[in-house]
Length: 228
Image (cartoon, rainbow, N blue to C red):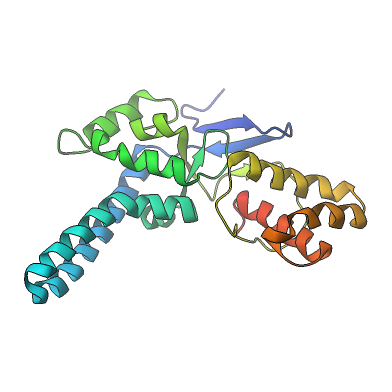
């Protein structure tokens, strides 16, 4: 008998490997939203107290701060770390529908549509959208092609060399991320000379000679697949 509630989804990578994604539901996402809201409020209070001593100039600085924090707080954290502090505390991560990490474009689209999800004055549209979606997507997720999943429960069938995870030195497109993962997976079946030769093509990005470049690329692949 199948379970009454199954939130696991399977997507197939271009390499033909099936990746399991455990989708997060409205309860976990609501708690993450409350934590992020509390962090923003705490930041606004502290900046507000400081700006109170600056007179009219302080009022302008405070308004700019509130605008930037409200709209770009989720964008920066999701594009940089894959999740806001609230999501990280709940063990959640934002992914593309194909299981790859989100970039700046997807994070920005998700953030810009939050005002629709919070109409009329509360996140009612967002909750309604999640309730009607098989993958618990709010409107921003539908537009950006993203899904929120449990990071600690996700599993990948891709076998990678045993190296420390290395964060990306710069934002990369989805196809570039897939190329790095594909390189790391296939490098297990190549000679060391061939691995070094291919890795040296990306020396401007990874730095160092072939062996060092190859190890850094393999580390980036591990980071892309959730290794930290």
